[in-house]
Each structure stands twice: as structure tokens, then as C-alpha cells.
Length: 113
Image (cartoon, rainbow, N blue to C red; front, side, top):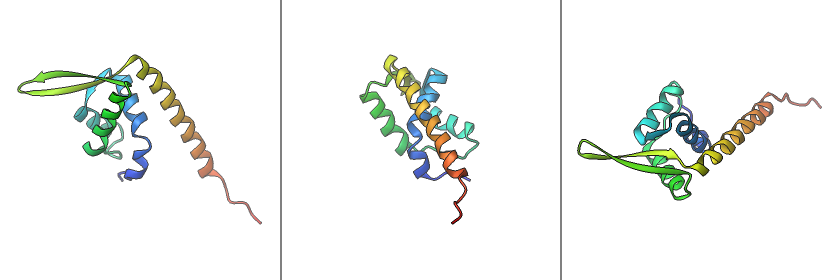
């Protein structure tokens, strides 16, 4: 079962930031493959979702980009900036807290009248 785009959309930023924190620097395709592997195929990130977010994070100075020639191609590597490390901690903590709250809500039994 692959999770819906709606569920993934709200969690993409913390997922990407956590991967960058854990791996140092990564390129786009590497990010998509790592997410697929870690989620056992349940989360698939499309290029159309990933690259706009990476560009936004770059514009916000949360990530920095290094370009490297690989053969005849330029590959962009993304890594966290100094402020990005702080943002990552806050973002991951917020998602973790949200998941706890969501779990509590889903476990709530209906009230009997």
C-alpha cells in the first residue's frame, strides 16, 4: 500500500530535513530512493513534489546547494545550513508531537449517550 499524496504532502518537509541531517548531503534522486527504501515502498516522492520543496528550502536558506560534475552532468547536492539544523530539530519535533496527538485522537472511543 502506497500512502496518498495528501498524507505525504504535509510530512515531506520534515522527512527531507531529517534525511539531510542524518546523511550530510544528498542529491534529489538519492533522496527519493532513500525514502522509498526506508518506508518499504509506502512513500514515493515524485520529482514534482521534491524539487519545488528543495528550491523553497534553498530560498529560505535552510539548505545549501553544491554543484558537482559527474561525467558530463552537473549534480546538485543538498545539505543543511547552520540555521537549517535548528529548523530541522524544530520541524521533526513538531511532527513527532503531532503524530502522538493524532494517535491519541484515533484511539479515542466514541462516547455513549
